[in-house]
Length: 205
View 1 (cartoon, rainbow, N blue to C red):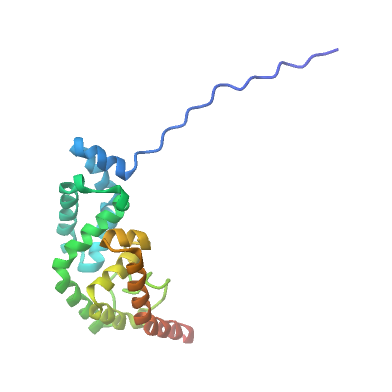
View 2 (tube, helix red, strand yellow; view 1 turned 60 degrees about the vertical axis):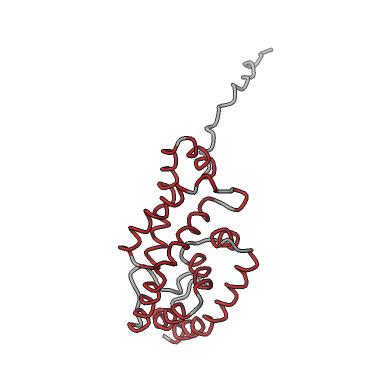
């Protein structure tokens, strides 16, 4: 009678690396150790700059980006995680600071409307109501963006260009999520004829 080799006993579990600290944790740490705030810049500066540049152009966005993170650093002790994530909070600061450039933004949109073209970073309708090829309507859409109330434009572009969800937009704008839904519904109704026309033109090609 032969006996098999003794069954090998499993070794001790391999320890897994802990997940990296969250944005909220880095922000909390930065209150006692300010250099830790740099992690938030590294994580989010590129996205915030892209959003700013699409709204007011790349050169003004460079200066405004610095102001966004300086403001966030100065206000970090007042950040309340119960009101939303750090990323949405940063986009909210960016949107508030953009209001000083509202005239420049509207002038830029009107210029696009006259040219009936668009910049290299994508059309104004990009992502607004799904992905629509609206190249022929870019001028008309830019004109609508320029004419709509700032609060509606902010909600739309946070959704389309910052890729924020409804709750994140509510955090960024410091409004109830129901208000965000109402604003985006209003914008959809306003832009729908232009977007439908763009779909129709694309089908006819």
